[in-house]
Image 1 (cartoon, rainbow, N blue to C red):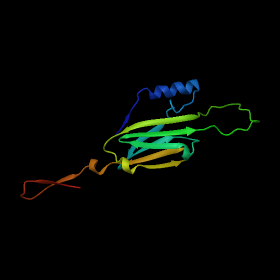
Image 2: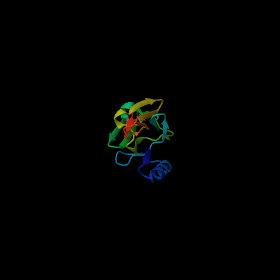
Image 3: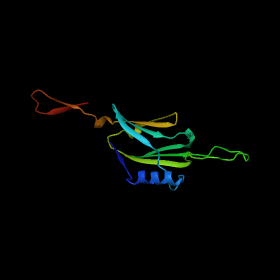
Image 4: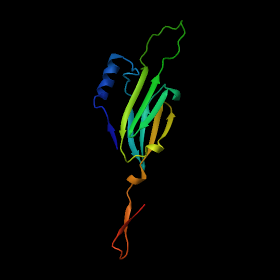
Length: 144
């Protein structure tokens, strides 16, 4: 039900990790995610440790889901000398094409322990239905 939009995105992420470059608004870094079906909904979990909820932006336009987040540097006093900095900073983004069978009007988002979790219900029209056969009428009716 989900499709990747850019097959080279993972390669870009690896290059950015090796080169130590941070994402910018014009060229954001990828954020790791998991996607799975749980009952009658799809669940997508994004790793965003150290990002405040105010710095997360979720948009849906038609069937394109876009998640952007920004991890800002921790405020440092002039007397602080950085010895080691390995945590990636900057802008992170992910775009996912959602299937027409998902109900994008009822997406729920929760953020806990650095993980953004989106729950997207499967649309009623996409769920299996039984077709009942009327006695003698020769017509079939769909029951929902």
